[in-house]
Length: 397
Image (cartoon, rainbow, N blue to C red; front, side, top):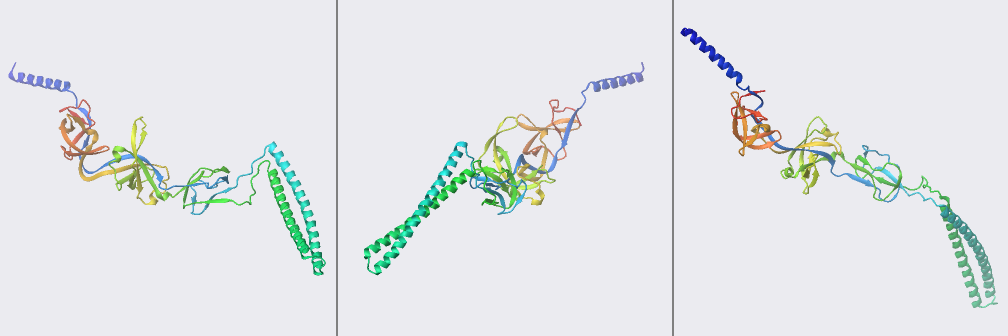
């Protein structure tokens, strides 16, 4: 075999071996990559909350009585001093058969006492008339000196006594008449009746100008003192209550900026922390985990026109800005993993995964600040799996 043929055969053999080696080599692993960025970064805490009124007013019945129908409905506007509902006296109770018969007998007895008192009055009036005539005659006899002064004074005393007796009899007639009217009134409502429409009523007025938020009672009926009827509030004083985890609440301070999102409106609202409550509470999460939560109250700073449709109890999501800065190097949090107590990432370099230790800073949701180890523009692998090792061939998918 000539030298030329030997060289050609060797080249063909090398090509075949190379092709075989390439066929046996593992193909590059497809990976997701993201660029290292430099720009605005904010560390925040997100949590769901609800809108609430700062100072709602509950309008209750001041005394026990009978509530007339409440015509106001939730959403109605009221002015300070406007009548919101009326009360009247309770209806007379119905009488059982035994009590009804007793009332009938009491009315009959009262009528008899009235007749007796009127008869006594007639007797006293007759006695007074006789005493008056006798006194006048004794005056004339005394002037003619036919009777003594002592006898005339005795006659005067008898006249005065008869007058007093007549007045007493007249008052006894009045008392008997009142007793009869009372007995008849009791007998007249044996089945229970409401008082007439013309009776005096107690009107309860709105304490503030606002909107009716809740109507606890709508229909007429007996009501006890202090029982709630309406809740009124000024929707312009709405704020947001967000219950944060206690470990997040300790980092929140009054005056911090809050972005209120996903409340149903077109744009996010601006707010700031008004108060962090000093007492927390325990709540069980949807996963059954006991959590310590702290109520945080957020004041809405956006103009009222921007959140006109927001109401009491509406759902709102709040983002608390704990720290923010510009020109911050950052990567997706999913690109980070720990190895040997250090944070690392895989950098895509010349088609291979290169392990790179990094120093992280603040973390906020899906982004993490990088203090050292990466430069803007480099490509890092997100969600690296167990197949990715140092030097592994990868392909950006």
